[in-house]
Length: 507
Image 1 (cartoon, helix red, strand yellow):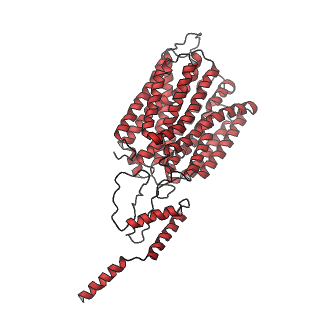
Image 2 (image 1 turned 90 degrees about the horizontal axis):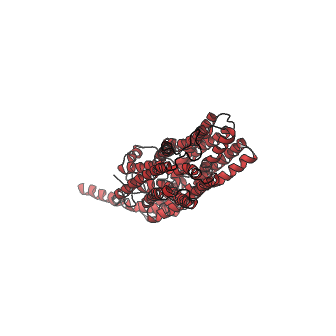
């Protein structure tokens, strides 16, 4: 009787370990069909190859990878080997490094072209408001643009939590209503505080909803060309700034500023809607939206992330200040207002090329390496070239072109560096927090530089005559701008020494 039980057990064991080729093929085809139904963007061959690899390794112990995974993240449930009853195979996909990713890059470019392009053309509106609409209220009007940028960067860190949970498309659609509504509402403004609420806060909140999605999306679809993809997407703001500066100027003359704002509202709404339709998240497990988890906050506690955002904060104190001070510097040193405006235009144009080229070279020489190079060079050119430029237009042009290239590279590399160092599963939240920190530094940096300038006698007061301004006072502001970025470069150098190599850090 015992021998019969042993024979039956052995026969059952042999049967349980035997699988016909047709059964195996059927299982593979069924699983592939299930995956393609879940995510039509996955090519059948790709999915079948992933399943084949998964099924071939399911009978053996799953070993931990030799190095941490960056782009092939594992879901919270781990890799299922089908040993549990009713368990479905979990297929983990690597970013395609192309394909639909280029459509996503185009969607991000379009969004930045309109949404940020209009914001970067704020100077045209500021000049119009202070000269014609609200004369004599220069200081009050200047806060409108500051509110818009501040809301976009700082509140964007908060909205990144919602973007990670409900998906990019809904966030961009909602943001488009706020951005366009801000433009339309501003067209009816009769007081400066009306513009605070509309063109400042309302527009900025809408931009804060879309910005984390636009910054994070390209890096999710690429690995080898991650820097280039991110650079192309973010460079839309540079081209948009150039195009909308001319367009707004012409529309103000032909239609008046109220209808100009309404036209801007229509343009930015349409472009953001198209961008939202085209954009798509990529994740290793195929989920289009993820829940915010404790893991996201654990990453933000890592020393490497804290070091990085410290470097971003210090660098951002000086990042926007040259753009805001160069025009007054040029005029105070004997150049014309047109030449001062030309310097700003060259800086914006160079920034566009820097955002694109920075990503390309970052892919080749290392993203963190090029980030360090951009910050260090920005500091060096500020302390060496701008500090001693005087009234030489040629020297100032050399400075703004170099600084624009390096500054544009720095901004375009932040999201790819985060993806490379910490993976893409928490990228939306990390981007929102990082650019929120960048926004705080940018908001505080320019007022500090202006306060230094004023304390040293570098600004005109009531009753001053020509020659009363202390031109050497600019050296104090320039020293602050270059010095604080130099400290930021040292922090990025420390980060490079701590986490050298292209891998996810675990510190």
